[in-house]
Length: 128
Image (cartoon, rainbow, N blue to C red; front, side, top):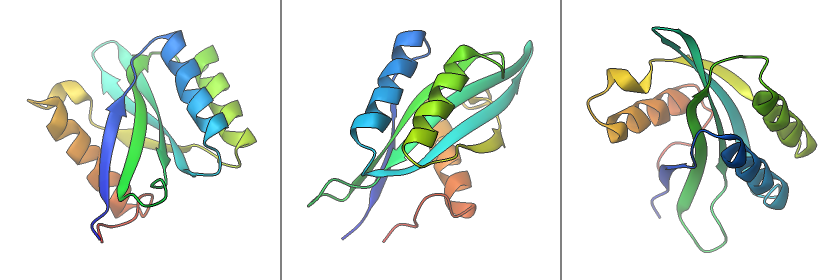
């Protein structure tokens, strides 16, 4: 069986972060890991929030939900909400510095780059 890992982008607003937190709460038994991804932009730092989940039973798809680069301040209420949801589910978000998605010609290339970084750091399982 081949394990497929793919990003599912939620959005950048408050509602999207609440949706990500709700996914963590309701699927805590499937939660694999949480991530606080930072990148540099012309105006400073941009933060992304992400959570990976183990495949549903009988499935070989590992979803990684992300709110991409919509948070400019590390002390943002959205980051605090995310960290609290992750901790309640027994996860400590892993902080990682990445290239900004604007440095890639296509969004899919950015997501392949991030999956590669996560695999190299043993934060995602290798393809099987």
